[in-house]
Image (cartoon, rainbow, N blue to C red; front, side, top):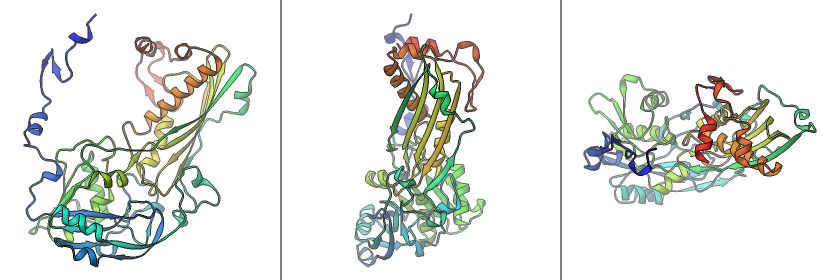
Length: 429
């Protein structure tokens, strides 16, 4: 057997250490992140975020900001002139979001103005000098409270705080869990919201060619082709008039996927002032405004027979979409897809309710819905083992899919091409 010490090191070939192809240029500064782009005549952008979670904008005062040395322009929604649009993943027409809040704010940190300065400090000082009169409205920040009959509505025209509701194709009746030989384990598991927080915050830079009028957007993003298509739609531009470039990206992990509303605001600002505009927010802003991940409450019932084998499982999943439903609203569907995990069940019922709340909008993070399924299932199995007095390894061994069932179509639909789950469990143990 090969010892751990004698195995080839990560990033090596046959034990001889080699650098990844991108490393030398990054280590010597030859490759550039967005903040390093040599854009002549650049302006720096700083967004002004709402300090109210839900309210009506009465007025936005920009005169103090314009008096700050080095501030060139302060833009509000009326100045920017970009209509509300979807982000990366459209959920419904009721949830269109303006790049700068127009009349109403729905979460703390939502952008209400954009300050352009000759230096990063001037832009930041100008943003600090902007102040708004916002008439507060009732808020709902808990995903379960959002479904209460008297909960304040974020989008009254939509008629509810439900972004998405689905009922599973399979219905597990109470009788399947009430049989005398079946023990029912019931759990409420919280998969908490988290900020993505890559090394490089979500950022971009935009420049317009003064001769051709062509817009170039440099963006730290995982999906430049998607960004281009969606940016053209948001700004009503032809594809030939837009170029999107992805330089080095300091981490993405799902949080830098598709168009964000800051991109369209910065691009529109560059077109408005006729100078390059660079936006690289501080970490504190990025934590408040970039799409968050996870955010689920999972109600699960599992029937376990006397011999430890699984009968039926029933899941009722509540998910948080945040203030503007985006790709995060769909990720509960991926949790459903992976709900069977590596185990056998008689039946699985999986129902989903996705809430709109006065919180930072939700997006994808590290596996995007699927790790939430694993966390739910393995916590449930540990709880079941504890309740029936069985070793947690043994209860898994009795329920793992056998090696001879592959390729295997799960009850949720995905196909597993291969697997040796008992082997990996034994090796881990």
